[in-house]
Image 1 (tube, rainbow over the protein chains, first blue to last red):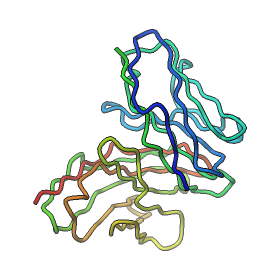
Image 2 (tube, helix red, strand yellow):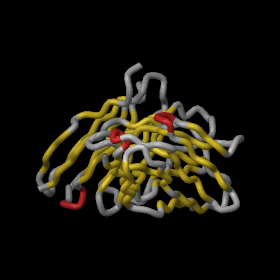
Image 3 (cartoon, helix red, strand yellow):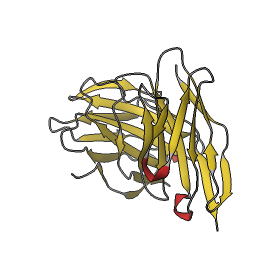
Image 4 (tube, rainbow over the protein chains, first blue to last red):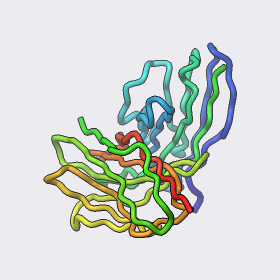
Length: 115
Length: 113
């Protein structure tokens, strides 16, 4: 069974640009969540999507957005990039079918560098 | 809201020695606790989780953790570490049926020969 797949793995963007990251969850998983990992702030929850609806949202500005498609694949978008957005962006999936404490499986992440 | 504190940012240890990585949590409601490991340039891999039941949880790679409700702790242990255990370890908590997982700052375990 394929794991969580994220693309691209590495990318460099210029300040002010926008970026879109993609995530394909494990087959059958309907919940996709996104996390930002930086040396200074650690791992922080961005948002979670379940059945194409945003179910939870972390404390990030509106420049960070996401969506989920009918096949559970998800994208996240960051507009008007700032230097501080440089980070590892991790996608995670889980069945999300109402079982408490679902195990969350992580992808290998997308490394974003803003210059 | 729930939160996690990992008490040690770095833990150096010699190969074949035992190790304990400490984690304390705070929450006003029942929580679910997890330990993840991150190797360089990789995502997070689940080591073990506590949902309910037995307070001693066994995971992969010989790791185990004990849930202690009275001390609000979930410390990770391994009786004998290997060089390959060198990695960053994260304790995490969720409070229910969602993936809003709160992570500790991480503990860098370095195993020396």
